[in-house]
Amino acid sequence: MVGMSYVLINNEVVEREFAKIDIEDRGNQFGDGIYEVIRVYEGKCFALNEHMERLYECAEKINIHIPFSSSSLKEKLLHLLQKNEIQDGIIYLQVSRGVASRQHHFPQDEKSATLIAYTSEKTRPLEQIQNGASAKIVEDIRWLRCDIKSLNLLGSILAKQEAHAAGALEAIMHRDGTVTEGSSSNCFAVIDGVIYSHPVSNLILNGITRRYIVEICKEQNVPLKEQEFTLDALRKADEVFIASTTAEITPITQIDGVEVGNGLPGLVTKALQEHFEAKIQDAILNPIS
Image 1 (cartoon, rainbow, N blue to C red):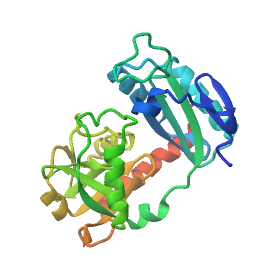
Image 2 (cartoon, rainbow, N blue to C red):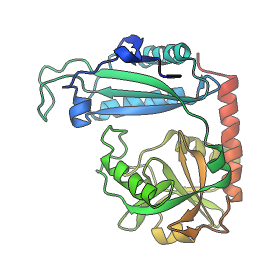
Image 3 (cartoon, helix red, strand yellow):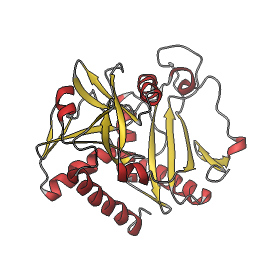
Image 4 (cartoon, one colour):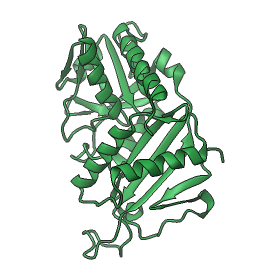
């Protein structure tokens, strides 16, 4: 299969058909691990350093020791990317606590973590980026450490499925009426020219694309407030958009069947998209080596 010929398992690149994971790996049995999804444009990784930093931060938060330095792991991922000849797609990377007899607490004689990575072809969602998409409001039932990019995604999966069943692209989640984020994205509302985003806390994942948006707003003097906002504010917003590694910056033009603003991608969102596109092109021209 194109883009899936080779995978990285720990320190070894093997053909996909020979890739095996032990049935007692804690990532498989408990979701005891973390992951990252890295975007690839024209054969070049986007925001690789930022993804590596977050991976190691999350590993530290749950006491997993990654058996490679960040620089060594980056080399392995770039080698995997080159070997699979991916042009537009993703690198999926996950690290579990490793193999141990099934018990809930950490194994006393903790062995090395299990690291796996693979690549996949994935075209940019240009139509939804340009024309917008719909969302459904869903209660946020996830655990209270959403700042950790954990393998435990059942809460997000259930929210995403609820949105999918309603014909929507994304679920915008809330806790007691306060908007948190999307099921696989960060959520932003534009109200009277000001961009609002839930502040960085244990209740959201500080997305890499989100960080770029904050950076762009500072560079371009676009007003942005990292503070809580309500479902009522979301429904009355002039513009709403979501952001993630694969969705990039996608306008949300309809929520629960009701148009956002005039039902078209807004000017603030479009301006952010242009600046983000410049970041992508810069990464293509000046790749990490």
